[in-house]
Picture (cartoon, one colour):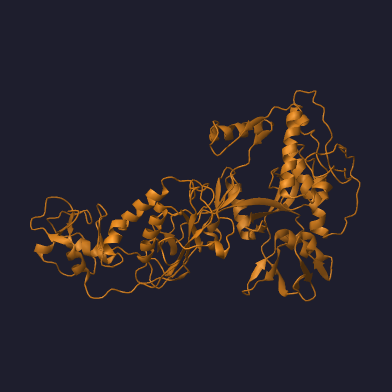
Length: 604
């Protein structure tokens, strides 16, 4: 554990493997939540930025979870020098193709600001992995291959939150490199193997991030003990570097020296780790674990935390926590990997679904029905009841023999003889006035649904906004369905203005997470589900406009009680495969919407 002052930047990993920073306001919010309740398990990002309303950060697993699509992305808490760009509130951005501004990655922004502070005329980003040249005089970014020029800007923003005192020792704690002096002069670092490995890697990459290829001045450390053992986990034999802080073997004669002996495992110098890839670092960590075991420190393998082991996941987790608290190393297997999308597919490999001629369906704005009044529609499904039973109407909770409890507008005068009706199929009885009021509060599409047993009269339609549904076969198999290919569905609904059938006509609605990719097995039952989903799409029943039950956002496009699988190659979020009962569950959900194979065939 280190005693220091540092700037905290929370970052998330995008699909290109780059860590992207959250805004300063979001980082302040996350830190405030942690300070208010150190045991808090999650942070809702929509509380500080409405654009992030679908997102939640799970602090236990360090993942960002998108609630409407089930997407998981790793997050990390990184520390940077207080004098760097994040600590001073400077944000460097480049102009994208649509004319808006995109922030640089944190380490790139720090390097640009450092070069500007040194009054350099230009900066080459190649040492950071980008083929760009920054021209400070013209404030442009030049592509080294295409010579394309983009504008850049430096914007003053809220400074990122500052922390001081003991900094946590975790694998994601040093996402940004503090200067070596800040690491070594503010306190004795923790001697555990994890901290030493992280500090070696990050301190080794510091020079590239801050000087961009310029060799920093060599300073002799106070009295380092250099371990000259070769390291089998690296690609080649490691040569000790004078700048590496590596602990030598520690005697284990005292009773509390077991942890010290664990830290005596050979550690590669930081200069040899700076250029290693993530797989190489993982091999190093595995080798360090083997060194721990060889040193005589007891370790307990806690494996298969996803529940496939005889060891119960909860018991395994508690065991790991207790052993960590006692200073004992714990060997964990790698957690299952989230696979949201299939491998890339070329256009020639995409095929139409057998039995379906088209690959796309579009919906347009709903056309208003003319002619019949609400009373005429309701009466079409009712039978007259001359002597109402002595029971209550389940809509207004008033006696059927008495008048309706509904007092609102929109219902004309109804004679005493027509005041109560019985629905023809299910037999449930209601006040006619109550049924007319219920119909007026719905889609007014000519259908009626019994509020007691949900029997549908007529053809039920929804208020799904205009959009497009694509469907085709891709040459990959879903987990649990190895004998068939996969049907991929792509839904795309743009944001727009609510119509008269929506909760707030005339008000804009949002459409988060589109296009949404969903998957079905290309089996006989999978194709049956697809055919019924096409009917549901045509009837505007797959999506709706309302309030999200997961994010709390109102006036947004939401799923409409027909579940889809949005996770292709895993089932970590519960929205993937294998799930043996998924297709049957979807058929039941479609049946509840009035869509069955028999009903569709009869109409065809």
